[in-house]
Image 1 (cartoon, rainbow, N blue to C red):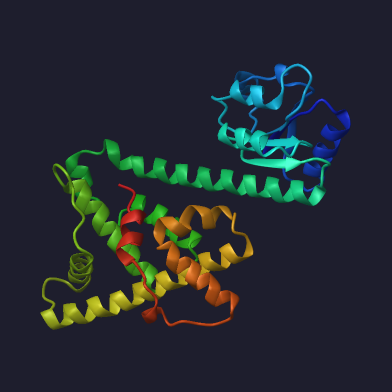
Image 2: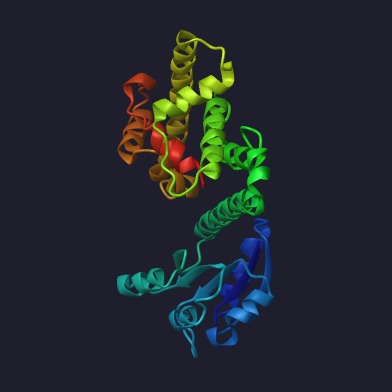
Length: 300
């Protein structure tokens, strides 16, 4: 990561730079003593990922500088000795990531910058997934039809998200990937507005593809029931993983990004309370919205 520090106090700039370098968080791309000395083009030229900026500076303060940096695609952390709620609220409304109160506390700075880095890396990973999915966009209908059942372009982001959710090691993850592959391919072949099939139909079609056209209804139903149980256990593991992250740090980027996206947040909170009380609930007694997770997982 590349950092840029803007503060009219040389001692503060030196202290922040030392904290960043000592913790091996990245490199200092540059420094400035006033907001008037920086603009978006300059920061982009320096390839700045994270800008640390003081609120009060003599010529152009931090708030006004941030207003001038609306096209800056890096993250901004504001540092100030002012604890005015109005000032802090305005800074957040302009898009800053965090607000650090002076005097500088090394542990707070490290905690904040590590969280910002995690958010950046998570965003880059998701953007990478989106780019990988765009591979199919230029393919002809024939090329799309010839894609295998679980295309590499859906397997890669699928595996990434299952890993992020802490459930890739569960046997049900394979079922989920097969379902994602089916939904992805089905939507690619659809004409007009696409409507997701029911969850029951999705399980059935995947079972039919797995067992072959010669499979009896009894064999199909047996496989569907087994797959449903495997998937439920896998999702419960993902729920427990996110609940554990939330207990450790409610502002954890993964917890913030995934908890309410892939799960009913009421169930996440319930699982957090269970973990906190060291109690266990069987997956069968937990409300698990399989359809929500699968449909949010499918990025088409």
